[in-house]
Each structure stands twice: as C-alpha cells, then as structure tokens.
Amino acid sequence: MAGGLTGPAGMTPEEHSRDLREHGVPEELHAHFPGHGMGGLARAMGIRFTELTPGRSVATMPVEPNTQPGGILHGGAHCVLAETLASTAASVHAGPGRYAVGVDVNATHQRGVASGTVTGTCTALHLGATLTVHEVVMTDDRGRRLSTARVTNLVRERGTGH
Image (cartoon, rainbow, N blue to C red; front, side, top):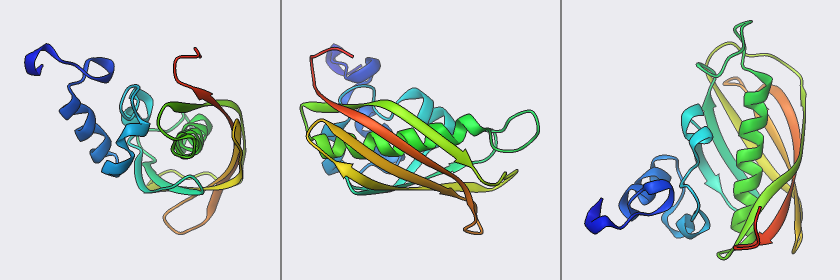
C-alpha cells in the first residue's frame, strides 16, 4: 500500500479507481463510491456498467456461474443485478456526501436463461430528495424479457449510520 495510505476496504486510491473503471463506472462518478469500490457481490457476479445516470443505468452480468441447481440464472442473481443498478443510480442522484440504501426490492421472473449474458436496464420512476424508485428490466442476448423488478431506495447523509 502506497505510503500506508488505504482507501475503501483496504484498497489504495489507485486500486479503488481501477476497480470502478473495470466495472464501467465513469471517472467523474467515482466520488459516489466512497464505500467499498464496486462492492464484493457485484464484483464476484461479474456486473459491468455500460451506462450510469440517475435516470437510467444499464449493466451486464454473465449467466454462468450465477446459476441455480437447475442450470438457469438464479432468481436471486436477477435481484442482485436489479438492486445494484437501482442503488447505484440512486447514489448518483443523491450526490457526493449522500448515499442510497435499498429498502424494498421485488421481482417477477418471466423467463429462464441458461447461458449468455443478461442485460439490466434501470429506469427512474421517482427521484426525490429522500426516496427513489426504479424499474429494472432484465433481458437475454436475444432481447427477451427475463424479469422485471422494482427497487426503492432511501437517500441518507453519510455518517448517519445504516
């Protein structure tokens, strides 16, 4: 660690920036990720952003190894992708010094998928001062809808606890 200085989760500032860049987060939005970079779960599941604004965010995730014993994408993986997209968009909306925490996620699964890549497209339904609501649609490589989720986030000031 450079000079003993560490960033989030024991990362140096350089490691933190590299982690976010590798997951598609634009440099100008890095200040919105002061916690643990991309986060261990999103990193482990292979989530990569391709678009990120408060009103719309898009990310991809590989189906494998995120499958359930039946060989299709795990329903919980749909929810992880949805909450990652919505919470990140909500945090960008909140701005530096504030953060978003998920308080409700619900998903309806329309179709299973056993291989390829899932794309999540997140659209803001409400961007308030303390509450955000996003809809996330997951599709397969052929553009077929796999699931639809709605995620509600509470916007908080940093330092107010979890």
